[in-house]
Length: 382
Ligand code: BJ8
Image 1 (cartoon, rainbow, N blue to C red):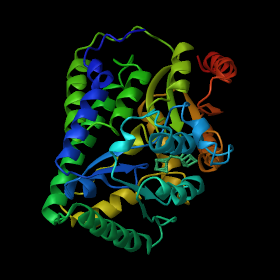
Image 2: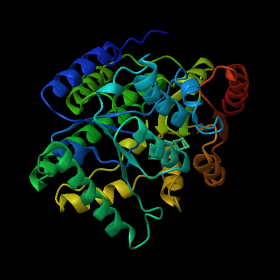
Image 3: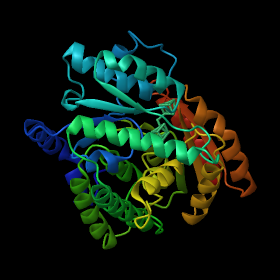
Image 4: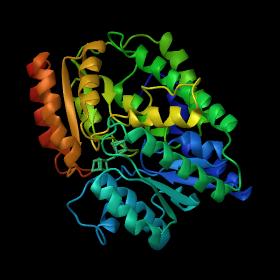
């Protein structure tokens, strides 16, 4: 069903605009950094005068290329991302025409599949790996991550020839916080009953957060919020649903679309393409390096242990958004999110909030089966 919100058109039509911008920047000698994860602070990249795009793949069409090198039984996000790079440099098919515009990848030590993929990536693209403490709550974690961020800052300085000054960092922190506040505004509007926008529409906007420049993205979200404020409420009356789990990278809207086809009203997503990307702000009054280290270590990703803050946040969001049920989404072979589901399920059960677990890939073969399960879940919680 086409949306009545005109400001969504900008996000749909913005691909060419951004590609043209990246090409122009490259022509001027500006470095373009590709990333794969929320743990790599954009603020440091921008403070060095570089630009960035996130390369996480959500499309099925680059998976077969990846499977010529990678095992089949790993997460589709890893295969799709890697396949897009191989395709760009060897296949010439340019499934993702922005990949060849990247000068360097800044990767991160999160899940095993990604870490090992990053060891092969330098065959195609220069790759820098940011290390992460695995127990973010331990007393040594902050100091260690801080030293990793400073090292990364030095790397960016060598890459661009620009100094990453405290002033530049503070400016970028302010700008990133502005985006985070805007997204809070967008998500706040979704608490209405019924919400003024569909969850699948918000997901497509959130996916663009990782592709557009911060300015382009903010302008688009600001216009969207203004329009949503006065939008006629949707007449859909299905159960309010939260999606929680793995990111849904650009190209992947499969489960969100099925939930809506079955009458669910998605009101919030606890994922990296949802609240995890913007919920916490960076302290603008503290030392910028320390403030960044503190904020980024708070990201509640299942790769970290223990991850109590994620479980608590899911329960909190479920209450804030008055959800009737949670669809827990895991990408196939993502052990971290899959296993963490047990703790999430237990915590939600205490609050009498039902959970439906869906594990899927980027293919179409399970569409019908997922549809049947979602249908039954909707009936149960209606
Ligand atoms: S902060 S969720 S973007 S690591 S889904 S590749 S974890 S096997 S994408 Fe992620 Fe950063 Fe965490 Fe977010 Fe591995 Fe799981 Fe695949 Fe994943």
